[in-house]
Length: 353
Image 1 (spheres, helix red, strand yellow):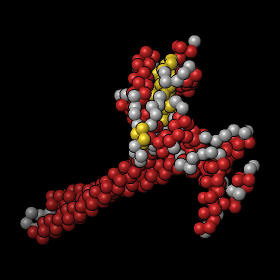
Image 2: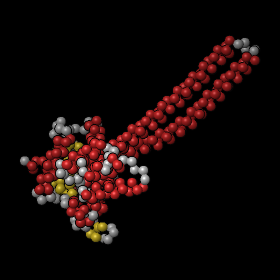
Image 3: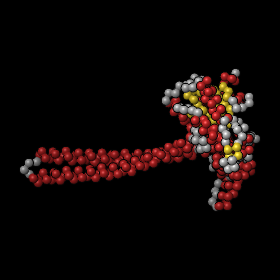
Image 4: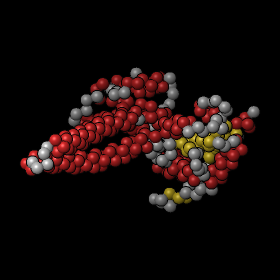
């Protein structure tokens, strides 16, 4: 274990500003030592690593470093998704508990209303029976029965008014909880930089598609920005993020219907195209390649025109009964063949043979 790790236990109880500042410095030093940009996801992973609050995360990082491997943005994103994003799902489960409480309250209210209505019906039936038994000339008895019926009607009306008020309040709370639940669900499945789905979102969408009877025929396009490290080194990470967002925008504008756009990690993207064959997917991929090649970006702060940039793309189709990892791996192989043969091009799995 390295020296940074040895400080983990001492950092677990940060109670004063001085200790908080020391922890922040330790986190930044860790990022700088591993040539990582201090952006939110990298900082969050490094912070949890330094705090030692997620033992499985620390173990993965330690094993990686002991093997002499470098940390990079993509790996930090994987660590974040695997170990830290689970907290978002714990929030979802908490919301689920609130919804259950709400539903239980509604059930109680409905039950109470049913009991009131049942009581009113019993009162009416009982008094009708009394009317049948009493002498018609007995005015006192009739008046008593009428008073009882009126009292029962007033009682059930008041009960229903109270129920309506509770139901209106519960309806507002249900809408609020539903909107919050949907927001958390979107955040857990979306990439915050581009708005595209992340890996977890892709898996969820595939499950949805399978449930709707989507046929086995499906194509995948895997995309990678050429020389992305050079873009970051030349213009800075903020510009690199802008480049990523523009590529994502081109992707969104080039697909439709059930097509699924994903930021797979770092500068790598995936598009899933249901009911498309290899030729159709290649046409989509080539269209995206040309649009990105024609992009001309200008840095806002100093009006500097960025050098044109390109993407490489690999295309594969799903074989009957094949899992998602299988045909994504073949699309990935086509992508790297495209990069090795000069970049800024589309290659299919067929061209690998």
